[in-house]
Amino acid sequence: MDLHRLRCFIKIVEEGSVSKAAEALNMTQPPLSIMMAKLEKELKVSLFDRSGRRLTLTRDGEFLYVRGKELIASAENMVKELMEHNDGMRGTVTAGCITSANLFIIPDAVKKLREEAPNIIMRVREGNSSFVLNELRNHRIDIGIVRTIFEAEDLHISTLMTEPLLLALPPGHPLLDKPSVSIADLRNEKFILPTSSHGSGIAEEIVEACHNSGFAPDVVYWGTEVFPMLFMVMKGVGISFAPYNFSRFHWPGLPELVPLAEPKLETKLSLVTLQHHYQPSIVERFLDITRDVAKELQPKI
Image (cartoon, rainbow, N blue to C red; front, side, top):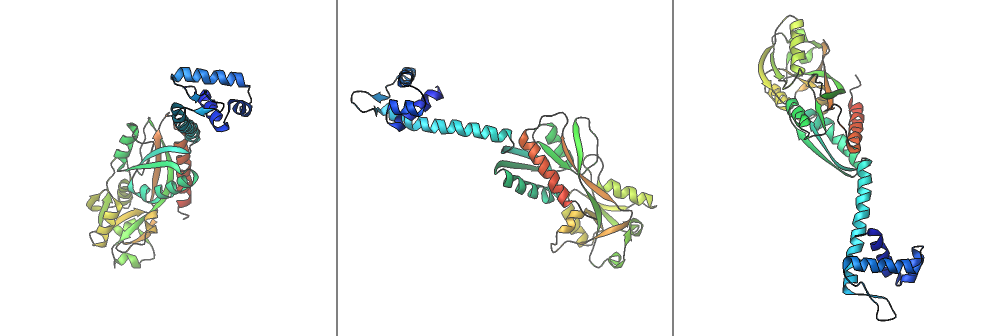
């Protein structure tokens, strides 16, 4: 159906006559009458009852007026939504991330995104680095946030945030009374470390620091999530490590996190996207917001 003809039909109905509608449409009456005749021929119905002096609608005309208004409104909304989608104001963004990113980065990023563009929907798939990278390569997510260090020709990897690694000690541990703690002080401790599902991560950095200090860490537990390992520290199973942003939590049941004096260990959150892959405006907008949020959360130490 020709939407221009439909709009003209609606204008005739609302103006009450062909002559008034023609004037409102800035055209003469004959072409408008011809247009309505073509519309009736196209639809194979009579839209107007022309038996009296006054122009009245047939039942088909009344039906077309109501549904036509809906159709025009829908078409206009579709164009508006398409423009908003192109401008990054509407649509869905799917991110894959590790737990810490879902705790610290995603909530603020989604809040800012919703403030700027309330029609955007956010989907998050949480998992380890291997899961996130697999989802990205299979085009099931738009972006990934991981902590492991790796290289891949098919991926674009950029540092999102760098955090100091803090030491988690059980309550009453003697090292809590020391003014500063070094890796060498941990020689006789039991270690609780996170495994790296892809590339190298926190554990590899800690193990290397221990070797550089002349000992191999006694690892009694390999885990995947920080919080369960911190709870194990509280139970006295051993010592562990956590990125700086975990110190923002002041929950009962979490151990005290203290800085390491020597060496100062760091961990990075990385933003990962597919190399040479077109990103819609909406995804680019979320990437910019995510970088801004990470910059605000970057420890000032």
